[in-house]
Amino acid sequence: MKWNDKQLNDAFNSLKDMFNKEQLTLTDMRNKEQLILKDIHNKENLVGTYKEALKTITVKLSGRQFDNAFNYFISRIAQRLDEKQMNMALNYSIDKLKDKNEHQNIRIKCIEILEIISNKCNEKQLNEAFNSSMDIFTDKNNDKNVRDKCAELLGTIA
Image (cartoon, rainbow, N blue to C red):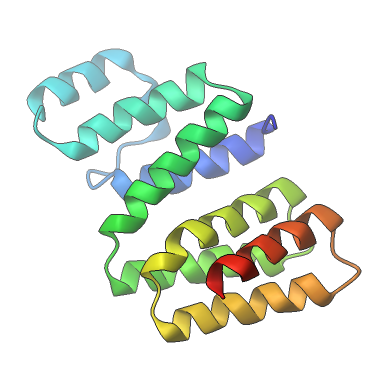
């Protein structure tokens, strides 16, 4: 699956926002010299490592490689989220999933994110994800691929 520019920018910006405590701009992220200096200065800083990896993902990877790297980062992020951050990630993913005007690939990525973070969700959060997925799964007006991924999510949650 190859993402269009908007999808790639949305994914990049979401990941960047999670890691970027210093609020660097996209221009700063593209400036290789600044990234190298930041990484040297913050050698032990995990944020710097993620920035470099995100740069690599957005520039060099495509298709399945991008999907694998993206899913890896999401799983690593999910392990570090506190309850408030988990709620934000869950609500954002559910909102994007419910939005029938959103591109189907983005909705599918949101389902994949929900699958990854579901093991850290509390019972209330799992119920929200379950109910949203069930609504989409049973609505025949939704895209078949989205419904299929919802079925997988329901299996993961159950």
